[in-house]
Each structure stands twice: as C-alpha cells, then as structure tokens.
Amino acid sequence: MNKDNATLKLQGMSCASCANRIETTIRSVLGVSECSVNFGAELATIIYNPKKTDLAAIQDAIDAAGYSAQPIQEDLLAGDSERQARLTESQQLTRKVWIGGIISTILVIGSLPAMTGLHIPLIPMWLHNFWLQAVLTAPVQFWCGKSFYLNSWKALKHHAATMDTLIALGTSAAYFYSLFVTIFPGFLTTQGLVKSVYYETAAVVITLILLGRLFENRAKGQTSEAIRKLMGLQAKTARIIRKGKEIDVSISEVQLGDVILMRPGEKIPVDGEVIEGASTVDEAMVTGESVPVKKQPGDQVIGATINKTGSFKFRATRVGKDTFLAQIVRLVQQAQGAKAPIQRLADQVTGWFVPAVIAVAIATFIIWYNIMGNFTLALITTVGVLIIACPCALGLATPTSIMVGTGKGAENGILIKGADSLELAHKLQTIVLDKTGTLTQGKPTVTDFVTVNGTANSNELKLLQLAAAVERNSEHPIAEAVVQYAKSQAVELVEAQNFEAIVGSGVQGYVLGQLVQIGTQRWMSEMRIDTQVLRSHWDRLEYLGKTVIWIAVDGQVQAVMGISDALKPSSASAVRTLQKLGLEVVMLTGDNRRTAAVIAREVGIHRVLAEVRPQQKVATRVLSKGQAERASS
Image (tube, rainbow, N blue to C red):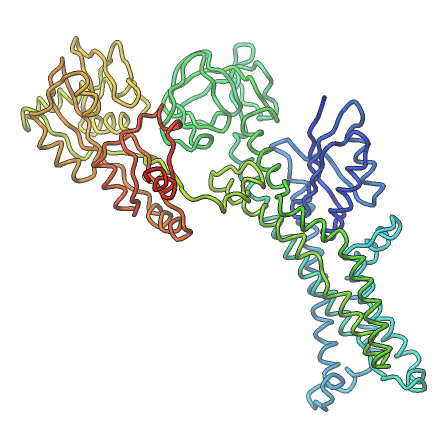
C-alpha cells in the first residue's frame, strides 16, 4: 500500500484536549492510517495514502476544527520566523502578566478587609470601593483574558469544550456575579444573600494561568534550541568551481553536481563524493568517533564535518533538505513530536476531562445550594471546580518530558530515535562505553620512547623518523601522536612506500628501503618477532596505564613507545551517576588488559572487555550481571 509521511506544525492549541480533538479530526480524514499529535511540541505526525488524500485536505480538516496547521519547515537555514513568532508571543504574555499582576495585587490588597473581616488601617478606604474594583478588573478580564474567550467561542462553534472554556466560565462567573452585586447591591439583601464581590478572584486566576502559559512557552522555546544548534553546525558558504573559477556562494545556492574545493580546517558544506585529492575528516559530529577518517577519490563526505589535514575536491550529491545533517534534524524533530505509549492513556483521559469537569461543576453548584442554601458559597465553590481542575498538567507533562529528553540528547550528541525508545530507557541494566574518545579525550600524546640502543640520540632520531614516516599515512589518533612527537623533536619527515594498516593491530610500510612495523604486543607475537629485549619497559609502561606500541625494523624490535590518553574531566562523575541509577557500566576497548584495567580503575568501572578488535566491537554481546550469573549457573 502506498504511504506518505508528513509532519505539520499546529497552531491554536491551548490544552491537551485540543490535541486530542485535532488527532481525532485528522484520523477521520479518508486515507489517513496513523496520526499522533504532540501538545508539547505542537506537532502532528501523519501517515496517509496519497492516492486517497493529500496534505491540503488534512489541513482543511484541521482548519474546520478551529485550528491551523502548516508543513514543518525543513530548510536548515529557515526557522527564524517560527522563533520570532514564539518570541512575539512570549513578549505579549509577559506584558499581560505584568499588567495583570499589578492590578491583581491592588485588588487583593483592597479585598483583604472583606476577606479577613478585619479593619486594616494601612489600606486606603477607596480601595474597598466595588466600582473601582470593577473598573480595575475589566482590562484583566477582557484584555489579558481575551484569548480565553476567543478560543472558547471557537471551540463552541465546533461543539467542543477546552481548558479555555473552563477558565472563561469560571472567571466570567466570578466577574459578572460581582458586577451584578455592584450594580444591584440591594437585590441580594432582599434575597437574604451575602453581598460580596470576587473581582480579585477573576483577576488573580487569569494572571496565574497566563503566567503558566508564559513558562510553558519558554520551555518549548528552550527545547527547540537543540534543533537550532544542529542547524548551526552547517557551513554558511561553499567555495565552488564554475567555468574554471573559484567562487564563494551561500549554502542555499549549491546545486547537485557542483564541484566544491576544500582546504584544511574548513567545514564541509554539503554531502558529496571526493573526486580529487586526499585528506582526513573529523566526523565526530556524526559518528561520535574521535578518530579522523581518511578520504580519497570515491569516498563519501558528509556536510558539517571538518576537513583536517589536506585539500581535495568533491562533487555535491545531496544538498538542502536531503543532506545527512538535514535528516538528523528531521529525526530529532520527529522524536520530539512522537508520542510515548504511556501518553495515549493520558490523552484518553484528557479527551473526556473538560466535559466531565463542567458536569461536576454544575453538580457542585446544585448540591451546595440545596444543602447550604447559600448562593454565593455555591457559586464560589463552582468557580473553584472550573478553575482548579486543569487537564493541562496531565496532557503536558509527558510530551514536554519527551521534548526536553530528545532536545538535551541532541544537544549533547545523543540521537534518540523516538519516544518509545526514551520510555524503554528505564529498563536498561547495562551501559557499554568505548574507551578512546568516550572516557578519554581521544587525543593521545607520546610520553615515553625507549630504544634497544639506549639513549643514543642519533639512533633515537633515526627510529623516530622511520616510525613517523609510516604513521603519517594512518588516521588513527595514536598515529597522529607519533607524528606530532616526531615534529616536536625536529625530525625530518620522509615518505613511506607500500603502506598497509592492519585493523586492530598496527601499521607497516617501507621507509628508505627498510620494513617498518608498528603495533601491539599481540601483533608482534603473531609475526613471531621477539620482544624480550624490551619486555621490562613494556611491563612498566603498561603498569602505569599507558598504551604501549612496539617498533620493529626488518623483523627486529628496536623501540617501544608509551602513549597516554588523558581522561575527560567528566568521565568519573558520569560513571558514578550511571551507577547511582542502578546501571552496570562496562568498558569496551581494543587496548591491552593491563592498560584498560588502570583506566577503568580511575573512573570506577569494574567490568572491562579489553583487546577487542574494531570489527568485533559491534558484534560483541555483553550480558548484564544478572544474565551472566544465570548463564553460569
């Protein structure tokens, strides 16, 4: 069956029951198979059959229900209009809250004598005047609270009731009852009723509701900052070659097939394929892996990643909303708009909540009036039911937590696929962390260099030259550390031939006619290279928690290097936090067991899987402690 996906940005919702009404409306459109409306994110995620309906028909149905919807903005450089609209709304709410707050404070002070039954000398007598209170309350009731009336009328025209209906009914009852008392003060006396006004009640309630919506608006704006930060990762311009000339153009002007020139340190503007030159690219933004990736003709490059060492040309293969970064943004947007399974229960409740509250309020008035015979008390009790019963907390809590969770995750480089994944997170028992670049900074440095011939300077420099010549062809952080160390010793770098990288073991190549092999103790053993001559130094460096590599020339060990990768300052506290949550933290690394054990001890990890080759890491199955115990028994 042919299906299309769409995400719409919704406007006009005031509470969770609005979201439930929109979802019901969309589901009723012929051709819509699935729909999820997230009140917190103000998004509708829809799956429909394009042969039976289209987005225009769905938008018309939403408009007919009293709301509006627009396709979500997919242009990475757009989004400012939505941000500006939210800022404008926030400014309007702030203005209304300030005005409502000042007037409400005056009204409360003026009502204190009536509420407490005490004469308070400090309060001027003119503040007790009912007509003054009526005039002061009017702008709060009809200007600050204008949206409640408009939304209530809109809902009424569509035979619905929302949270705005409750607020409009409750505050209007308090205000117009007080106004009646002010205009006809003798009527209540003749009826044996208490002559009281409740202007401050209407004003305070409206102000507090608006204050809540101001906080809600700001929370939504803050969670969408993650999207804007992701958008900000993209380069703003690109250097393209047209008609043999290099020109700088805006990212929006890059077209499919354009040839783009990259220089060291620049951010790659769009996705493409390398056609000339070679370099290493930092793809940590996409993969989280600190190791730069070598690129040569035929390799793919990803927009927003950083070119490190060389220059190259590539042909644009994906631009605009089709780039990898745009897909990440879309994934985060969909995750923020997703509905967790538990939220469906909340939506079922909020769908009936407002009508139920109105029914309870009517019943409350009838019961209190019949039992107590006091119209004023019955009215105020009814107003309390209408105002205090608020389904927003129930309907807003789950979607807001999803927005915050997915937004904060994206901000910290963690992509959460959907709300169901977030909800399942509480079932996690074990967290497996890689060492390099996750627990450590991913920037190793050479701390020790020991040769077979001791400290003969000329021999050290010669070996360092051979090692650096081979390592400069590798993109591994350890290789970069060796090359940087050689440069710091003023060693002249030469070219290596027949370079080969053995994944998880080491590198080799011919330099000045000699075979140079650099790698792990395990690899040396596999090649039957005797390491006994420097074994004591290897033991000492491993005991200190350093990564040790061997350097062999023409099949003979000539030196060992001790390399240290400093821990991230936050690693130990992060591990402790995870452990306090009841999670078992396991470290997975290709490093030797002794070095891995030292690093694990420093951060407080008790289980270590060491000497795991890169191609084995994904396939490695880690049992939780409970599973391991059951398996062993």
